[in-house]
Length: 252
Image (cartoon, rainbow, N blue to C red; front, side):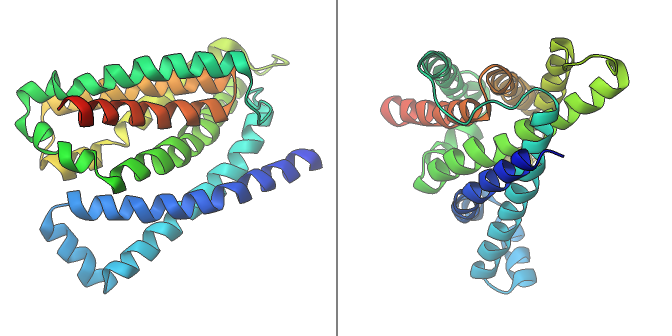
């Protein structure tokens, strides 16, 4: 294995550590407000205190960042998905435009699905809290992209390539597209537990909403990762949350 790639993977992982720690902290603060009180009580009984829950969440988030960051970087280098870790003007403009449009579309959730689900509108205050903002940007924008795009999408691309395009010198575009779609669907499915904890039950409409929103945007983030690099997927994911929540604060 290329020593230069391993060194860069280590440096990338080290850069993720403070972000992962902060993401774990703010995610805990948000989750403690959204979880069912009985579940919070059970967690307190198991962990002993809220402080221990925070420590456990931070440790778990850091572990995700270390494992997925390091191995994801290496997998990306093996599947032709690794790009220079820098920002360039044209990709940045494209990312900003798509993120603005995506954030506007995401904000419409309040007026579309929210019209049929009062509990969604009632959760608006929690969804625009400081903890939620920071958790969305740090955990959603950075950690989730490292886990779902840099690691999982790259891993899926490697597996699919070995199964169906073993003789190709480079990873075919169709392989990366398939990996992106599968990763996006798994990304959407990963939001189901949080959806259940927030709304109490999983209805057909919530299921459609979860896969429509998270799946579609997951494909967008994956495409930005494929074309420009993981940093643009991170930026887009974070900006999408910022734009949608800003619209809710201004107009709801």
